[in-house]
Length: 360
Image 1 (cartoon, rainbow, N blue to C red):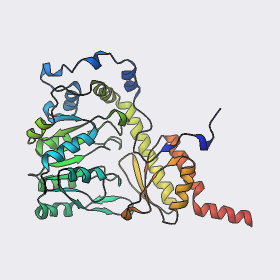
Image 2 (tube, rainbow, N blue to C red):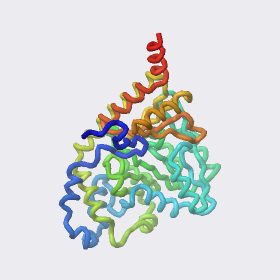
Image 3 (cartoon, rainbow, N blue to C red):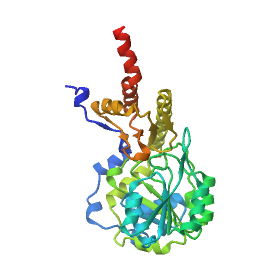
Image 4 (cartoon, rainbow, N blue to C red):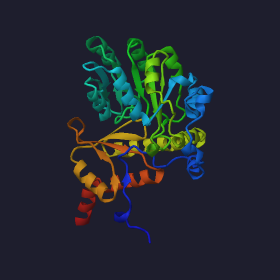
């Protein structure tokens, strides 16, 4: 028996997870995992390496293997970096609209969080690079943290803007959180070369988003040549979770699968912009697996109730500066189509027009 709408499992459009799931090669790793992955430590150290995955990533980014740091997702490496670089009373610079966790880990070490501005335009957000650079003299930060693509705004820091920041902050660790990298088809990736040119640059990636393995908890950083002390701080003598590494390697061996997902998400983002803008909303262009939408305030209570009742859960913000905004994670093609149909059906103006015609 098929479930009716009210009985179906909710679709979580509020979690930034990849609902397509990992590649078949990843599932094969789980189904055919050898027990040796469980009872043996890695033997990569016999070749002078940390792990098979760090070797693969070093080759992919064309950097020395010792400059690849593996972690328990980006979350783990972010915490390590802030605890290592940020002294009590020193300042960390973060985007004005960004993940709450950045401030939380700065608080853990007694750091001072200062925000640099993101500027809202009709169709996107933009980093104010001039303002970010101006903060250097005022705050002498211990670390600069830039999320690109940024959560929840979805925008990226332009190549020109990034180079300007790196030139201005050459003597300061600059951490580029790229957890959402890869959701734009054919995206250029030469950030490894930038870590050669800028020795205090760190960029972060994860297998949680595009690769659909949030539950596996594995991410990595590539660090500049001037951060050898941080590399030693993060090193794990006995290696990492070998099943997680095997899953990550299988994901890297599945480029066609993930390229297809990136293309589908890019197309669905365009459709979402079109629909929400046609309803009078501001839909901000995104390079991630979510979009940010600004609704008329009078719409939000009714729309949230209507969507919740159908198990279509999107993230309506409660923060004062984001009242009326919602972040909508992308689902599969079918799930996204269902969400947009439900939004159009529940839109108050349409509902009022329908009721009026029935009365007439």
